[in-house]
Image (cartoon, rainbow, N blue to C red; front, side, top):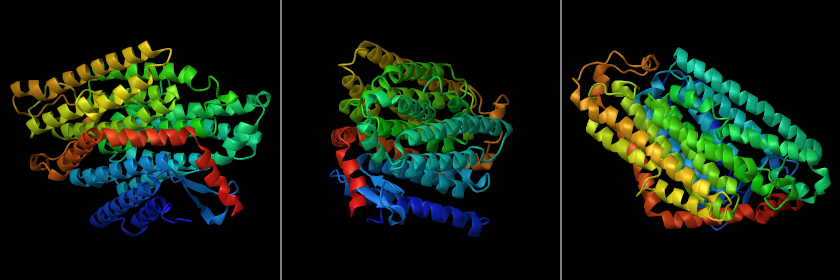
Length: 517
């Protein structure tokens, strides 16, 4: 076995308790270990991605117990792409949090951050449905701690709402897994794929119930309407660097839908007929529309970006719900773009809030207004999917993949109108924050929202304008530009990954083949 496969999960799992037990009162050392861990995880994930670039599927058996009896981690192109994306985002966020001092505004930021990364990476790499639930719970615990970091009544209230919704999802997840296990006798994903395919169609009624419950769980994680209500308040009230990290968390739900409903409940099986596309596509269309309207009507910059995240998830889930290899390839390209663009917009929003508060209104002229306005303009174009950046390419790929669908005109209309409404909402916010503020005196605004009182910095700290946060933002912008420039190779990789998803023979044989060795 290749022990490198488990290293990205084990490393943060070791660093997190070490920070708590040994470095609890030494912030500088916490920062050093957290950054070092993030860099090492990035190097490890890049090495693993290189090993899977040719389509190789790797399996790691914990305790040397073969599947389906033991716990396995599985690394294919899709898992490799998602862990690289996670590690890139994690390094950017930890550097940003250090540069802005967010990590010093509460306890245990770096330990919780490492646990969060462990949970996300584990969810992408696990080959067992129950351990997908376990890693979801690790995500929930760590993300709640990060969400209420630095305190505040409104932040705590939003955190409770976030936990309640996700605990309901976790309960439903357990019911779904219990139902599936009762029918099949296994929760290993590869073994499930074999047993589900062998079941007679007239004996799959209970199994279909479990599949529907699983889909509802993943829809909650992906913020699909009407299960999206937790996201705007949760993301807007969280520390915005944490919300930027959460940009990858909704993608865990999208990833789970892609993985489970191509591997276990494949589109060619009788049990899967009408299971996903019949309701997920309309829900995704409505999610995109509601997100765009939310962007247009938001009066706080945090909520504005949160609704932008909902809009991007709507576009992504439209592509996933089509359930064709071409649409899945478009979805994978768009996953990378939307994660980077959403995270970038959250970080820029945090820079604005640090200087003048969170209201989308003409307030005082903030320090570095010109630079931030340019960054906001670029991020807005990326988030809305306007040319010439990668979001435009991603939406074109999604629209092209929908040409043969019966609802093609609805899909095209919602995507195009949603993009227009989103860019109008972002343009309105940018005009109020950056342009109209030039006509106002540079004095403290006393009407700032009470949700921002715990975000304010001392005046000397604002004036110093640390460079590292801006470097991180420019780094994310550079990543989006590179994704645009290398759209050809990236789309070819995404199409190859989608083809591997829809022909899971290699995945199944690699996982179950280890049992005979």
